Amino acid sequence: MQTSVFAWDEVEPYGDAKLDRRMIAGKAGDLKRVCLKAGYLAAEHSHDFEQFFMVLEGTGILTTAEGEVPLKPGVVVHFAPHAWHSAVFHTDTVLVEVNFKTVS
Image 1 (tube, rainbow, N blue to C red):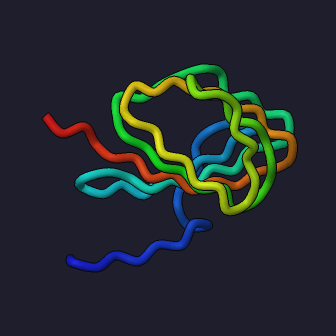
Image 2 (image 1 turned 90 degrees about the vertical axis):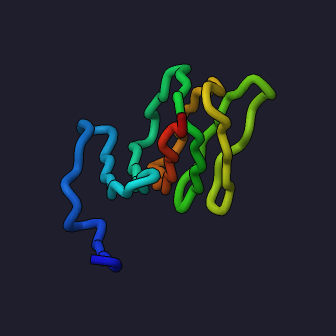
């Protein structure tokens, strides 16, 4: 099949009461919708892969090696592999992430 169509509400969620993640996997990466409740704290972490995310709804503060970034609808963030970051979400927030698999 060359074309696939998905509906977020039909993708199986994973996470907990404060974090709803839904992932659509591809061959070179994946696409995620992440819904976070107000007050959610993403502790400092990094990834072995490149990542983009875009804020669709909500607000918060992202902390990186370069400083703090206010999060609000329309903000797009790019992380190189191994770039550490943390975040706190002030309101219920919806993000879309694109994660690229590591190429050897």
